[in-house]
Length: 330
Ligand code: NDP
Image (tube, rainbow, N blue to C red; front, side, top):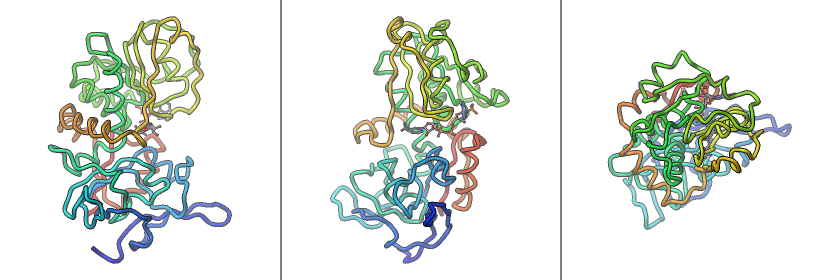
């Protein structure tokens, strides 16, 4: 293991102004944990964008190495669960927020947060999926638990060109669902259809103030956008349907009425990836091995190096990233 290694460190001065420093770190700069992982692959999620641009209160401990996801190899372990050489995967648990994270050559982590790399998955693929894709899978699993089968009717996916959206479309289509993709980038229609969307709608149809109930258009929804969009998706969900909510790309508010719930028995299913229990995580990752075609994943992910992290973080907040960014740390 190298004594000094590359990393990104977010610092704050007395006036709380934040700086992003691409620098050299040592193990002492990393917070406590019983496993040290050599980070081989990471990614840039929306939350990482919020952390690096300072546009959202993601970082709650300073200084901070950002980066909420990583895949790599264990280099030292005080845990009986892992030994040097094991391939592991980490998503969430406050890493990159309150515990030093993935944007460094090494990460010191708690073994309870790690999962062994699932059979059939590798580090690059896992990070091309990342928290966004794993959250998409958690969303699909929640719809399934609610009995939303392909026979019930179409499923709408909002924020279609984003990380959650692209993976949700690819997985739902593979499972046989008819997918309606809502996007502000209709010029990407061919790309979204290539992932498996049957129908493309402009996000403007959903993003303004709407009626308490609308025409029943879909049996379910995967929403990564929140605000008026989620309210309208609920208002247009058919009797007994369900919509998952995981994101706030449009806003954190939910200007909705209770009408879809009390007149159509529609359910709103909350999705949290950060503190999801280990069993659910392992199930989601093994489902991703099975239910996400590798060629679709290749189509929706593009690779950058460590030097591309900061630029990608700004681009994701500006809505300029299509699909997923996978970071090769080598
Ligand atoms: P991305 O930035 O990759 O995707 C978000 C997409 O939302 C954009 O590509 C865009 O799609 C759409 N969008 C952006 N701005 C607006 C807007 N103002 N109004 C309507 N649509 C908009 O982010 P991710 O997919 O990685 O994450 C999506 C959301 O999910 C984020 O809020 C993130 O924080 C949240 N999230 C939550 C998790 C959890 O555990 N609950 C885990 C992972 C993510 P298009 O161009 O097609 O319109």
